[in-house]
Length: 376
Image 1 (cartoon, rainbow, N blue to C red):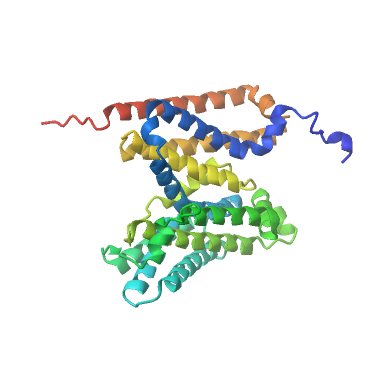
Image 2 (cartoon, rainbow, N blue to C red; image 1 turned 135 degrees about the vertical axis):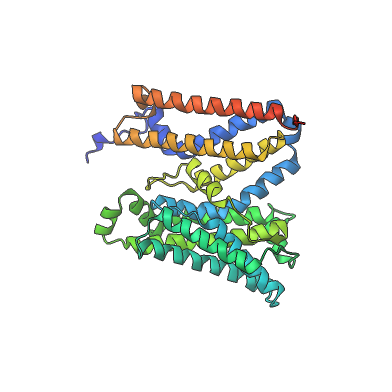
């Protein structure tokens, strides 16, 4: 390719310069809008230091899983079993500690290893048995949750050695809370793996075009299994962190881990269609969802409205990034040029309408929150 065909930084348009950063610009813009909104309606309660700590601790629980899910989704995969993997791994750890006297550090390592083993099983089901990712991990979710229910027998296992609560909610006087440190460390490691190792490069190549990747000599099935093993290990770690946060665990714990993590990763710019990934975007997505849920709690809006808001965020984010991919396929010069087409304008208007209707519903929920009108 001649040098004349490559635009120089001085000649590129603003849209072309912003293109590489859209993965982080999207969630950061939503974070800023949320902060502005809460600064108007509930500044005193939302911006307290104690509330910031709550947001960080909630986000930290999802950071390790978001890191691993970024690899899985980038390879055009999905994992719906992580909540059950986290719960079952944590329950096995709890029984090892409480019934068999296994030292806490060894039990934690076993929980993570068990999670990795479940991830290996998921990978084998998908690659060797040729079961689609969605169906395979959904079925395994039922299997793992069933085993958790059988083992726990309805019991709530509580009060663990100090190491477990430290992992889940411990404080470091000179740094961030322990779970936040763990979460950020896993995301930093994920960013390094994604950008500086063959595994990361192969992950993007497989997501972009699996057939072409296989023709170039990449062991596609093996690398998919590796991604699911990593996902299982991080789900096991999240189970340990959840146990420490609550100092308790039961078989029905972590029911919405999968949707929360997938939403955070997609909001952060990782494409559900593969080939596009951003660890920094996944971090921003995790923070955005935790801040949004905390805002709804601060506004005293019911839990059911939290589900509505999370679902809408997923839909809007996927629609937005699908539009971006259509722009790439059409070889438009940049964002601004793409927005001029009638199809793009219609799609953006529809996204705005969805956001507006959701905002209206949340306002209605806020007005009627805490003011029930019981019949009879």
